[in-house]
Length: 189
Ligand SMILES: [Cu+2]
Image 1: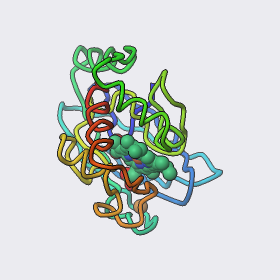
Image 2: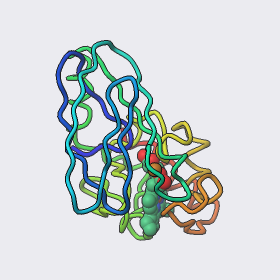
Image 3: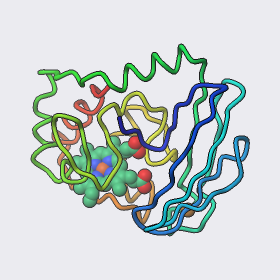
């Protein structure tokens, strides 16, 4: 399974991370869990941590990486093993093919969305966050906005307004297309 920006882990179990970058140098930093570790293109780094108590651990990229460096946030959600297992099941479940949002799915597939984003069974773009189980996340755009229908629609309409310089363009959808594609994404649980 593939997630984005939010890492779920069970408590009291060491987690081993292999860190690789697709573009420039970043740095993995979740201060309450471990020290910084650089994330470098064409070079693999490793680090580990062990979350001892349940909760949300906030992190932040710690190496200047471009315009949106300050907007490159991280979340680690540490849960009891049974809760982690339940979350894991939601991530490996196939996505539901909801007929009522067929128009939005068609737009997603026919427009450039599908070139950048993966929704398992629908598209296989590798450039941008996997959206297969988008709605199981708390935030969008690397933690810059909450994941709710209003922010989601505003983001799709004009990502550059929220994160100037980010790697998602506005596709200039009309109101009907924007509503349809937003409604579709809201079904990706
Ligand atoms: Cu950065």
